[in-house]
Length: 218
Image (cartoon, rainbow, N blue to C red; front, side, top):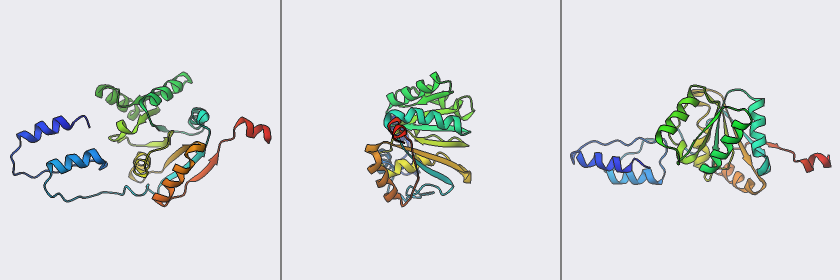
């Protein structure tokens, strides 16, 4: 919400009697505060739904140990085609995942709250134009992402809320195209995963990533 001071300066120069419309990809708390402050008895018009992912997006869950998530991500990059948008929880996590991908030979860049607007724009442009196959992003920086033909969304870290899940997944399968969204769930995150499924009335395909101990036992 770094643009709030700019909104305040613009609003201060406008006439008291006016028509004002507020557009936002999502209506989270900070945006609701902007609407409350500058709109008078507004009517809300919602396009699409924040309550369920698009039906043309294939939803997968990989049950995987936390220390195996990077390896799984790189396996999927090798097994599937197209661009990947990877969501992580923190800016440090975004840097770490992107650096490891680059070291492994993948073309990856990152976008998060510590990067300047120019750096964000450059990363988004290079991803959109195909110069980087992978974009690693935090939720804070990803709200305005609108890139055509994202083949695969990866929830590397579990989203905090069901609405965040829908927003992330909505970056693929745009304009009725087919998309894939995969969620990596560690043992401690399975309860959060089930809660998201109950809230959204969805059921994801389950895949279990075998550990070395599992392989030995077999």
